[in-house]
Structure formats: structure tokens, C-alpha cells
Amino acid sequence: IIHIEQMKVLKFGGKSLSNGEGINKVISIIENKVNQGEEIAVVVSARGNATDELEEILEIAAKNGDYKTPFESFKKVQNGEYQEIDLSVEFEVLDKLFEGVSLIGDYSNKIKDQILSQGELLSAKLLTAILSKKGINAHFTDSRVLIKTDSKFGDAQPLEQVSKKNVINYFKQNSDTVNIITGFIGSNNNNDTTTLGRNGSNYTASLIANYLDAEELQNY
Image 1 (cartoon, rainbow, N blue to C red):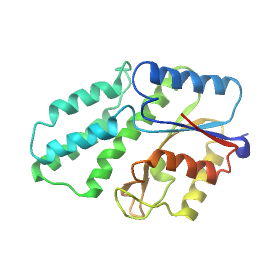
Image 2: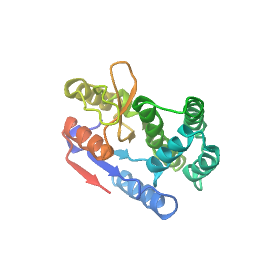
Image 3: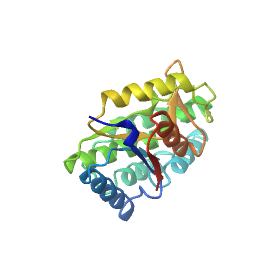
């Protein structure tokens, strides 16, 4: 049984999760902590420059340019050396959103948040799958069900009480796993995806550490 007060929240930024040495190091840090019996939760950013790349592809789509070529290379980079891991759900969401933006030639902040959020979802999905293959009991955690926010797309503010309750309940129910949590994203009362501003993953990690009264927050 987990003792939440001994919980350590580890936050990994985009650079530390990039292909090659980056993500391999993250995996070994998590493995070591699990093997030492530490209680950890992991918050991840989008990998590499994914957020900027998604924004660039969005701009190209809005100008009715060829967004498909950069999107194809984005997909390859996101899978990295783990081409066998299935990220098609997120890629399909992006495909539809980019196509819609391209047809209309414009987008709202709400659409932009939906697009940018996929970077964190891809990151957490991939890391969870890699860890699971290595025999670690890792669990993909979509922070949109935990962190409820107002509707200020692009720079949403968390609603403290409901978010705290969600986080505590979630960790009680998922206490025997390493929860791999998407940083940067939340959702409003209509369950529309929101983002917490550009330093959002750090914000997510500190909120979760705070709500759980964690022993420490380690930022990589």
C-alpha cells in the first residue's frame, strides 16, 4: 500500500525525453528508483521540440500549405527507435484537426490546445509502453481527468478544490503502479482540453506534488 507522504514526483522536461540518450536515461532513472522501492509518480512534457513543431504544423495548415510532410516526419520522430509502439490514436486526432484547420484556413485557441496537448499524450503513452515492456508496472495517466481548469484556452488556471480531490482519489485507486502523467494539460467543465501555459508541465508537477503532500519534487 502506498504512503502518499513518501511519494516523490519526478518531472521530465522535453529535452530529457528526446530520442536516443535522453529517453534512455529517463528509463534507467525510473527503473533504478522502482528497484530501490521508492514511491514515485512521473510527470512528462512533450518530447524534444514537439510542442513547437505542432505549432509550426498548425500554422502551415492554417495557411493551406503542405502540412502533411512535416507531420509525417513529426510522427517518425515521436516514435523514435520504438516504431513498434502504437501511437496511432493521437496521430489520427492530429490528422483530423490539421485537416479541419487546413479546410477552414483558421483555428481557435480551443483547437490549438487540442493539438498541442497531443505532444504530452504521445510522450506519456510512449514512456508507459516502454516501461511496461521492461516489466515495470507503469500506468498511463491522462491529467485531463485530474486537473480541472477554467476555460481560458492557452493559459488555463486550475480549479483547486476539485483538482485536489481528483488527484487524491486517483492516487488512492492507482497506488500500486508508477503513474506516468501528462504535464501541461487539463480540461474544463465541458471536458474540453485546456493547456496551462508554456511552462505548464512544471506547473502540473508542482500541483500534483502539492495536492499529494509529496515528500519531494525532482525536476529533470
